[in-house]
Image 1: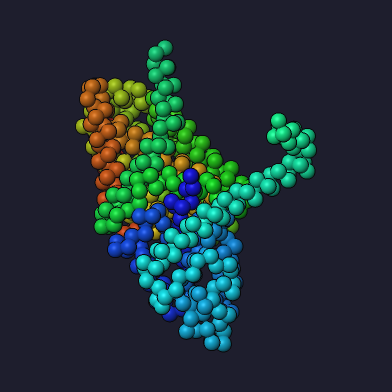
Image 2: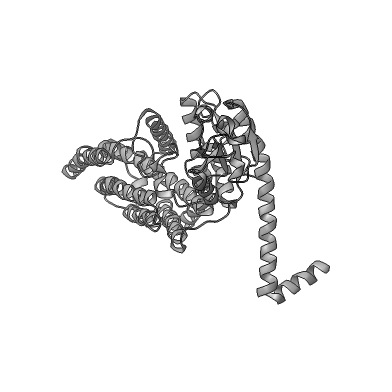
Length: 169
Length: 291
């Protein structure tokens, strides 16, 4: 049973946008949409977050900020780009300082289109992100197992050999 | 001999059941808070989902010492709870609880993050605010029952509340700080996730954060035990009254939490000490006069 799907905590960052999507994200927390029903918590701390929700595109100034938030989040983590600007750069794509959509800075898992994206679309995007999150958790577990096996074969060869013999039996 | 066996059983029951009860209390808290804000709210078992999720996250530690101190926090909370539920010495419970909060504060201080440091300082101020009242609670029980032993307190000839209403009011006041409820959720809060208020736990993530949640569940259960002591005496139906008053106190704290905004730390310190002085100290004087 995967608990990560039942308790996704998200950190929200607003890049260069008009703040329209920003307000729609906050609207998700209101009694009308109430994302806490799904155990979603809007935390301000990247170290506690599982989902990185970004609105707005990436420009020269916020590029290091976005990267740092992403790097501070512990695995498994998912990035959701909300709104036209976060997906492609939107109306700002031709500006002199714009680099483009969020995927120019960090790997994005789910794209939520819209200008501004509606709360329903954002919640739908987060739910899609949960499936990716679960997949990633499995991948992380496999990687950890592999790393443990490798450590064993290097540092404790006799234990590893014994385990292999047991497996053959 | 049977008393020792009973104490061991209740100690083990505390170890096993306290996290379950504490987690459920946290779930009820979130549900009731949501209903008070006209929201549906998370499922009742949400705190447990959060706990197991945090347990499975990638461990990121800012330094080696932090998880050691957090573990110390959990350990001292469990030990003070054990003293409480094996009907030990109430003064010992209060002092062991102080050790736990010291560990918690040092865990926050161990990281260089300014948010964490501010959180630690605020936690120190909170400790300074509630500690005198906790001592007065222990002292009040001693003056009223003639012993610090919880066993004697539980078998008092009459309800303790009748002689210590002021001390009970003071305890309810500091319970708001201990449960980390508004208006006194200065060092860390379960609601305002966007602020400085993440404080103490800013640099703590994954499994270590899960341990802190667990410690809070243990802590909340035996803090409600203090409320129980006020309404327990030798009568057979007193446990029912005690548990009902625990539930009422908890509900009251949730209600206040949803009605109040956060106060400044100066106001918290001044008001807590005022309540301690007026309600607690006057009650103590009364008890000393009665003897």
